[in-house]
Amino acid sequence: MDPKQALILIDTNIFVIDLRYKRDVNFKKNQAFLVEIAQSGSGFTTLVNLMELCGILSFNLNPMQLKDLWLYFQERYKVTVLPAPDMKGNLPAVEIARIFGILCEKTSFGDALILAFAEKYLPFVETMVTWDIAHFKNKYSGQVLTPEEFIAA
Image (cartoon, rainbow, N blue to C red; front, side, top):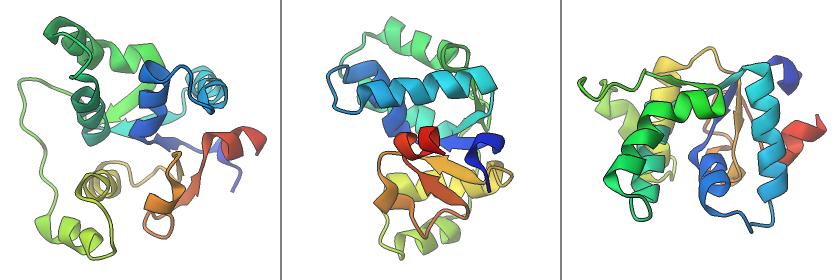
């Protein structure tokens, strides 16, 4: 499958590098990937990823900046968050048994949540892009690539 023709699930670490680690060795490759995804409109992430990003950046942002990140994230990156972020809603349900099953595959709780949400709300997305390939390889139903591998494809 050609990843350039696919819809792409984007992991949290891609956004963290873009927003927090400008001197990271992978920053330019990361940024090139985000530009390509924004232009193609093929990027997706889960509500769990957005909440994880907000949690990571909550140590550096004031409440208004954090709220702006939440509200304008999809517009900023030209990606779709599913299920849709809604401050007045509840966290959509995923089966605890499924999360536990993923945990049994030696997966962190955060990654298990992301995988469970992706399975439930993004089953049509066949490619995941992350800098942490080892966390998702043989656990995500589709192919898993780094931003560098995606750009090279």
